[in-house]
Image (cartoon, rainbow, N blue to C red; front, side):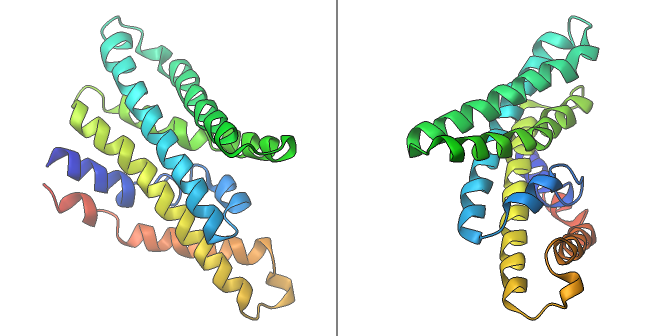
Length: 198
Protein backbone atom coordinates (compact mmCIF):
# COMPACT_ATOMS: atom_id res chain seq x y z
CA UNK A 1 0.00 0.00 0.00
CA UNK A 2 2.83 2.37 0.81
CA UNK A 3 4.34 1.77 -2.63
CA UNK A 4 1.04 2.43 -4.43
CA UNK A 5 0.28 5.51 -2.36
CA UNK A 6 3.67 7.09 -3.07
CA UNK A 7 3.48 6.01 -6.74
CA UNK A 8 0.17 7.75 -7.43
CA UNK A 9 1.00 10.73 -5.23
CA UNK A 10 4.21 11.36 -7.19
CA UNK A 11 2.55 10.73 -10.57
CA UNK A 12 -0.60 12.80 -10.18
CA UNK A 13 -0.63 14.89 -6.99
CA UNK A 14 2.99 16.10 -7.06
CA UNK A 15 3.58 15.87 -10.80
CA UNK A 16 7.16 16.88 -11.54
CA UNK A 17 6.26 18.90 -14.62
CA UNK A 18 2.85 20.43 -14.00
CA UNK A 19 2.57 20.59 -10.19
CA UNK A 20 6.20 21.37 -9.33
CA UNK A 21 6.97 23.14 -12.65
CA UNK A 22 10.33 21.39 -12.98
CA UNK A 23 11.37 20.57 -16.53
CA UNK A 24 8.63 22.68 -18.12
CA UNK A 25 11.09 24.24 -20.60
CA UNK A 26 12.00 20.84 -21.99
CA UNK A 27 8.33 19.93 -22.36
CA UNK A 28 7.66 23.16 -24.26
CA UNK A 29 10.67 22.62 -26.51
CA UNK A 30 10.37 18.91 -27.23
CA UNK A 31 6.76 17.77 -27.00
CA UNK A 32 5.53 18.59 -30.51
CA UNK A 33 4.27 15.30 -31.89
CA UNK A 34 2.68 12.51 -29.81
CA UNK A 35 4.97 9.93 -31.49
CA UNK A 36 8.08 11.77 -30.29
CA UNK A 37 6.51 12.43 -26.91
CA UNK A 38 6.14 8.71 -26.24
CA UNK A 39 9.86 8.13 -26.89
CA UNK A 40 10.92 11.21 -24.99
CA UNK A 41 8.59 10.49 -22.07
CA UNK A 42 9.79 6.91 -21.90
CA UNK A 43 13.40 8.04 -21.73
CA UNK A 44 12.49 10.50 -18.99
CA UNK A 45 10.58 7.83 -17.07
CA UNK A 46 13.58 5.49 -17.11
CA UNK A 47 15.98 8.31 -16.15
CA UNK A 48 13.77 9.49 -13.25
CA UNK A 49 13.38 5.95 -11.95
CA UNK A 50 17.10 5.22 -12.22
CA UNK A 51 18.02 8.52 -10.59
CA UNK A 52 15.62 8.00 -7.70
CA UNK A 53 16.62 4.40 -7.13
CA UNK A 54 20.31 5.30 -7.08
CA UNK A 55 19.91 8.53 -5.11
CA UNK A 56 17.83 7.39 -2.15
CA UNK A 57 20.15 4.56 -0.98
CA UNK A 58 23.09 6.93 -1.41
CA UNK A 59 21.45 9.45 0.90
CA UNK A 60 19.87 7.06 3.42
CA UNK A 61 22.78 4.64 3.59
CA UNK A 62 25.82 6.88 3.26
CA UNK A 63 25.28 10.62 3.55
CA UNK A 64 22.74 10.81 6.40
CA UNK A 65 24.39 8.29 8.78
CA UNK A 66 27.78 9.95 8.37
CA UNK A 67 26.31 13.37 9.10
CA UNK A 68 27.07 14.85 5.70
CA UNK A 69 23.49 15.20 4.49
CA UNK A 70 24.30 18.73 3.34
CA UNK A 71 26.27 17.16 0.45
CA UNK A 72 23.07 15.62 -0.95
CA UNK A 73 22.59 18.22 -3.75
CA UNK A 74 26.11 17.63 -5.07
CA UNK A 75 25.73 13.86 -4.89
CA UNK A 76 22.36 13.99 -6.60
CA UNK A 77 23.66 16.22 -9.39
CA UNK A 78 26.26 13.56 -10.10
CA UNK A 79 23.74 10.70 -9.87
CA UNK A 80 21.15 12.36 -12.09
CA UNK A 81 23.77 13.48 -14.63
CA UNK A 82 25.08 9.92 -14.78
CA UNK A 83 21.55 8.59 -15.24
CA UNK A 84 20.74 11.06 -18.01
CA UNK A 85 23.96 10.56 -19.96
CA UNK A 86 23.76 6.80 -19.56
CA UNK A 87 20.22 6.69 -20.95
CA UNK A 88 21.11 9.18 -23.72
CA UNK A 89 24.21 7.21 -24.71
CA UNK A 90 22.23 3.96 -24.85
CA UNK A 91 19.58 5.64 -26.99
CA UNK A 92 22.15 7.08 -29.41
CA UNK A 93 24.06 3.80 -29.69
CA UNK A 94 20.91 1.74 -30.16
CA UNK A 95 19.33 4.03 -32.75
CA UNK A 96 22.60 4.94 -34.52
CA UNK A 97 21.57 8.55 -34.93
CA UNK A 98 23.81 11.01 -36.72
CA UNK A 99 25.99 13.58 -34.97
CA UNK A 100 23.54 16.45 -35.34
CA UNK A 101 20.68 14.40 -33.94
CA UNK A 102 22.97 13.19 -31.14
CA UNK A 103 23.59 16.78 -30.15
CA UNK A 104 19.83 17.42 -30.08
CA UNK A 105 19.29 14.35 -27.89
CA UNK A 106 22.13 15.41 -25.57
CA UNK A 107 20.78 18.96 -25.27
CA UNK A 108 17.32 17.64 -24.52
CA UNK A 109 18.59 15.24 -21.91
CA UNK A 110 20.70 17.97 -20.33
CA UNK A 111 17.69 20.25 -20.07
CA UNK A 112 15.81 17.47 -18.30
CA UNK A 113 18.51 17.19 -15.66
CA UNK A 114 16.43 19.46 -13.44
CA UNK A 115 13.43 17.14 -13.63
CA UNK A 116 15.51 14.07 -12.86
CA UNK A 117 17.30 15.91 -10.04
CA UNK A 118 13.96 16.80 -8.44
CA UNK A 119 13.16 13.12 -7.80
CA UNK A 120 16.04 12.14 -5.50
CA UNK A 121 16.07 15.55 -3.83
CA UNK A 122 12.38 15.16 -3.08
CA UNK A 123 13.12 11.73 -1.62
CA UNK A 124 15.97 13.14 0.45
CA UNK A 125 13.74 15.75 2.04
CA UNK A 126 11.66 13.03 3.69
CA UNK A 127 14.36 10.34 3.90
CA UNK A 128 14.06 10.01 7.68
CA UNK A 129 10.45 8.84 7.42
CA UNK A 130 10.66 7.21 3.99
CA UNK A 131 11.02 3.47 3.49
CA UNK A 132 12.62 1.89 0.47
CA UNK A 133 9.21 0.85 -0.91
CA UNK A 134 7.95 4.44 -0.70
CA UNK A 135 11.17 5.72 -2.29
CA UNK A 136 10.76 3.25 -5.18
CA UNK A 137 7.14 4.26 -5.57
CA UNK A 138 7.90 7.96 -5.66
CA UNK A 139 10.78 7.49 -8.11
CA UNK A 140 8.75 5.38 -10.52
CA UNK A 141 5.72 7.62 -10.00
CA UNK A 142 7.65 10.79 -10.76
CA UNK A 143 8.81 9.30 -14.04
CA UNK A 144 5.30 8.12 -14.81
CA UNK A 145 3.92 11.58 -14.03
CA UNK A 146 6.46 13.20 -16.34
CA UNK A 147 5.55 10.68 -19.06
CA UNK A 148 1.84 11.46 -18.64
CA UNK A 149 2.49 15.21 -18.68
CA UNK A 150 4.62 15.10 -21.82
CA UNK A 151 2.20 12.88 -23.76
CA UNK A 152 -0.86 14.92 -22.69
CA UNK A 153 0.83 18.19 -23.59
CA UNK A 154 2.04 16.90 -26.97
CA UNK A 155 -1.43 15.57 -27.79
CA UNK A 156 -3.08 18.86 -26.83
CA UNK A 157 -0.51 20.86 -28.79
CA UNK A 158 -1.06 18.67 -31.82
CA UNK A 159 -4.83 19.16 -31.62
CA UNK A 160 -4.45 22.92 -31.18
CA UNK A 161 -2.25 23.20 -34.28
CA UNK A 162 -5.05 21.65 -36.32
CA UNK A 163 -7.58 24.29 -35.30
CA UNK A 164 -7.83 27.95 -36.14
CA UNK A 165 -5.73 30.02 -33.74
CA UNK A 166 -5.61 33.82 -33.95
CA UNK A 167 -2.31 35.07 -35.40
CA UNK A 168 -1.32 36.81 -32.16
CA UNK A 169 -1.54 33.53 -30.22
CA UNK A 170 0.23 31.20 -32.65
CA UNK A 171 3.33 29.38 -31.50
CA UNK A 172 4.64 29.94 -27.99
CA UNK A 173 1.71 32.00 -26.60
CA UNK A 174 -0.88 29.28 -27.25
CA UNK A 175 1.56 26.70 -25.86
CA UNK A 176 1.90 28.70 -22.64
CA UNK A 177 -1.88 29.07 -22.34
CA UNK A 178 -2.27 25.32 -22.87
CA UNK A 179 0.43 24.56 -20.30
CA UNK A 180 -1.24 26.81 -17.73
CA UNK A 181 -4.60 25.10 -18.26
CA UNK A 182 -3.05 21.65 -17.89
CA UNK A 183 -1.30 22.84 -14.69
CA UNK A 184 -4.68 23.94 -13.36
CA UNK A 185 -6.13 20.54 -14.23
CA UNK A 186 -3.38 18.75 -12.30
CA UNK A 187 -3.86 21.12 -9.37
CA UNK A 188 -7.59 20.36 -9.26
CA UNK A 189 -7.00 16.65 -8.66
CA UNK A 190 -4.22 17.16 -6.10
CA UNK A 191 -4.73 15.10 -2.99
CA UNK A 192 -7.11 12.60 -4.57
CA UNK A 193 -4.71 9.98 -5.97
CA UNK A 194 -2.48 9.61 -2.92
CA UNK A 195 -5.46 9.33 -0.57
CA UNK A 196 -6.86 6.26 -2.37
CA UNK A 197 -4.31 3.89 -0.84
CA UNK A 198 -4.07 5.16 2.75
